[in-house]
Amino acid sequence: MTRVWTEGFEMRDLVGYTHYGGVISTTVKRSGAASLAAFEYTFCSFTKTITAVSEFYLRIGIYLNSTEITVFQWKKGGTVLGTINISTAGITISCNGLTATGAYIPVVNTWFILEVHVKIDDAAGTVALKYEGTTDASVSGDTKPGADTTVDTLYFSRGGASYVTLYLDDMALNDTAGAVDNSWCGDGHITVIMPDDDSTPLQLTPSAAVHHHLLVDEVPADGDTTYVEGSVTDEEDIYGLAACGLVDVIITRIWTEARAEDTSSSGLKVALITKASGGSEVSGGDVVLTGTYTTKVLGAEQRVNPVDSAAWEVADIDALEGGVRTRN
Image 1 (cartoon, helix red, strand yellow):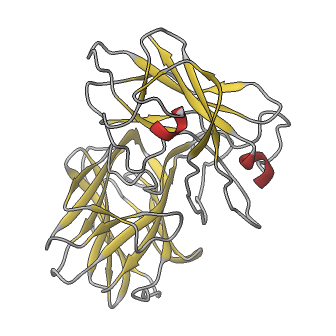
Image 2 (cartoon, rainbow, N blue to C red; image 1 turned 45 degrees about the vertical axis):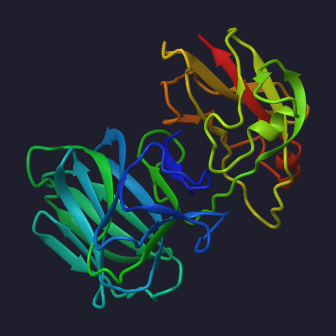
């Protein structure tokens, strides 16, 4: 698979990102229950570090109250390789002296999807935009302003005057490797389903004498207030999940996500698990923890139901279980 990154801010925190002035909003959102908001300072920024790629496709859900803003830059380290700006003239690409402005001028106070395709090359490079699924602007030629041949930093900024408000949601990034997720991301909505029941096994130690799922169902996570913990390798807690409430949707992928810490600060690990009805547990890779709740723990991304290798259906999601396994 070539989906590099998917984010809907449904965990209602900014673990895994560098940000200045960004906060979580639960009042203005495109999908689910939350978005990223940048409105408290004259300048706000949000940075995502990725594995370096020379070509990518990015999707951003955007909501603005003014069309005078710097939205996105792609970088190698601290070096800016290109920029997308929104103004009353439209959406403008700027990359190594190549510029183009699209015909679409975003409507304020309304969510829209902006997609960006970037290929870094000193002769056959490309930067192209889609606005709400329609091609809007592009440049081609030398998109490599210096010696950098790859991008490893995505930088989202709310520049401009203090009255400008920017919200981001339903973000995704594809590279061009593999047979799927190797082109435009297309539309997408991201939501979260939280634990609402105990299943089996329940091998971890609860922080209070209550049902285990009640200790792991907070968003944002509450740190050491409520939790389950374990010190023996390959102990598990498995939980039932709430009904998803989805209707008439195409489900393209699922994954598990958690916040965890290693209280011994010795580099211990956890793996997240899903279990579809009638199937076996599917474990994600081992994730090394730190001594604070600053690790974004992700489980295996699954595009199909492993029981029948068919697309996920709402009934599959409603019967899904998930949990965590201790590792060493």
